Length: 326
Image 1 (tube, rainbow, N blue to C red):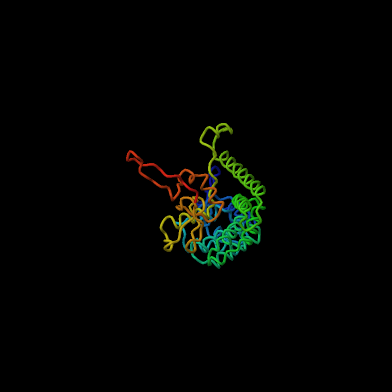
Image 2: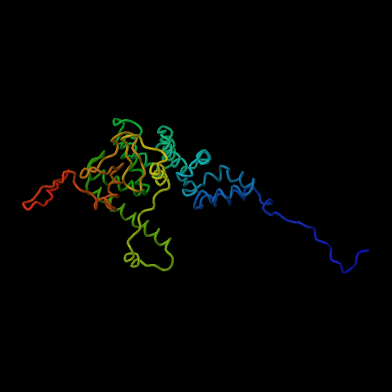
């Protein structure tokens, strides 16, 4: 006989998993927002390894098609067959950022220029500005082929399309091409206008980045007095290229050099592909845009003519000869 005041015994280990009751469509919608806003690949991978259901739905094409640039930002030391497969899944899902990232990796790192250029072209067809600009650099230099494969007109056309979409490096490159008459009729005033526009866009991006990362209520005066505007953020793909060849993971063939601009990371695909500084001859650049950026950042403080002569004076000391522009 049960006592009236005795409480019924609760069942032990009684758990209710509300997650299992959520429909797949809702979970996919949540994962799409997560993968587009993740700050690193690890953020999304930590979700995939939570349970089998999240792993299955996280690799759904509707989710992978929304992967953002930072979610695809594989580093050189983390590169593996698994990372390669993940990027290929994103490409198959129609992710244009993945097409560009994997295209750059295959073209320069894995030394498969045909497949790499094809993937970048898929992204460029869908108006992906970085892919358009990278293809223009390839056309300007004839990368992946011989010197006769240079196509200046195609390079200018691709660069102009990327500049129209607002790509800062493409604006700067097109401005220098117009000023120099390189692959396009010379137009100094239009070239100068594009260079000013590129500098203004770069300044605006740097200011937004500074304000978003600095706590408190910093003002423009604080920025001007506190060390200047920060440099433009390096694209994850360019950072991977720089780490890939700079860390010794793979050695460049003898005679090949990397672009001297610290934010680029592109290597030569044949000897003497990149242009060399005409004054010192010590640095190399894949584009006029990289040359202008590196000159402003540091090279103008380091550049010295190759034919700088040193001759003894009357007192036995030394005097520097006149530097001639190479």
